[in-house]
Image 1: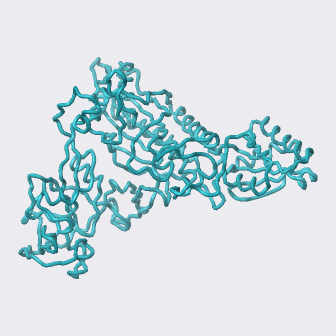
Image 2: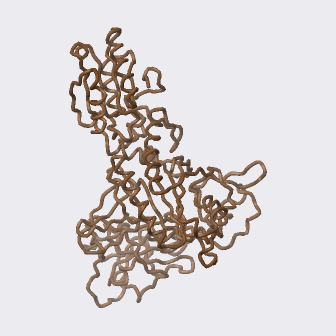
Image 3: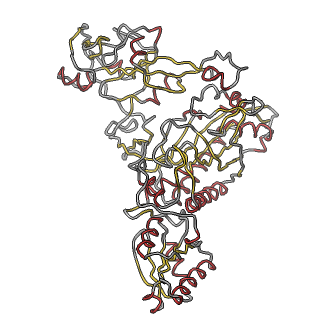
Length: 593
């Protein structure tokens, strides 16, 4: 491709909202342009990268027996009602209505559609196992799109679904996809690690995320170098130190002015935070069996149609610990969680900054305590009055919970739950996920098969996703320097860029054309920078774009019968002779990238 004829423009500076390297460089290098918050257009160079990544994924999915399909972006909501998720998904889903008044939605994911497909096709155990996959647009109305392609509203997902006669078959294929994903990320130049994760709205019994270590990542991974334990902080377990038993002392009100935080309270009383109880106030959106709006339109029904209700959740954990929203959501079966407002907190008899379970209206709240709290004695907790706390609060004597569960978030240095060594916290980007869905969707949507004894059984399912856009951004996060992107050859928009420095000299121009045509004829993917521009501009753009191998055709080189070859990643430069060996030299250079 000739750069002079390309739809292409580089930028000296990225747009103001671009903060992380991948967002800045993909904009500056002319690969993408932002159309709206969380919505991007791919320019020709960016689309080539995207297609290269998709080709890698396709090859690995085909290698394990996957069959590619294409499922619709616009989906009838009847399928989501069948699965039960229509009532569970909040404002992230885009809902609409066609001209005939039928309710539709934009695909966030495709479990419902693929389940409706296989229940019409799969009849017998002989048709399984089976793996279908696609590359398709998804839309999730993210409240806070960020970091360019890392968290978008409209994005491309490779989602795959496997179908099985039982859990043993699913386990086998889960491992096959696990290995395929490992190959995909390796070929893309990443060091993604698999960690246990929360199934979330997907449901199912088991889930793993593939996390690419990156300082800009929004996921925190807890890992143990001693035994190999590894999990997303959302669900990571950790060893909790149980204090020695104490005699339960009587309650004592204390005046604690200006101590609305645990740190302030601990300093004021000169006690460790481990001797305090932290109150966290949340509102959970939970499923409600009352759904009396089935005959109304999407526009009229709103939240009521989804059969959900809000419930105040009062969470208590030791003062030195942080709440895990995911663990709490799982403990109370919440579809969504949000912080409670001061008005909502006071409505149950608590006071923001000075809250505790003592004396609250239990009929209007769900009390959840961390599983360490019953083993702690004589804690300082809020008095539900401004500037007052209570000493010697003890679980079991002074209050009891509706739910006792592990709701604390693990952190750097906490004890590994498997071997008690210290955990290490690292940031990363989720680039893929795999789920054992089991029969969650097949039971709900009546997707079954006849086994060997002619008995009807539900199809067992697995689900496997890779965000293509996020994967592209993750490659840039890992492979860049101060001058621009350093694409691995497997993902680069072109393998080679030929720089024409003829400056109007027809003899040099002919030499550059000859180099370009020779490489293209040999099957290499070549970008020809034939623009009438300064050498510095061309070199800077080549570095910014990150094409693995650069060939410069200039006066001095041609006079000596050579061209300058530069490896983008290492900066290594050498002269290679023009002639029959040029293609071999360039191919070897590309392979080294």
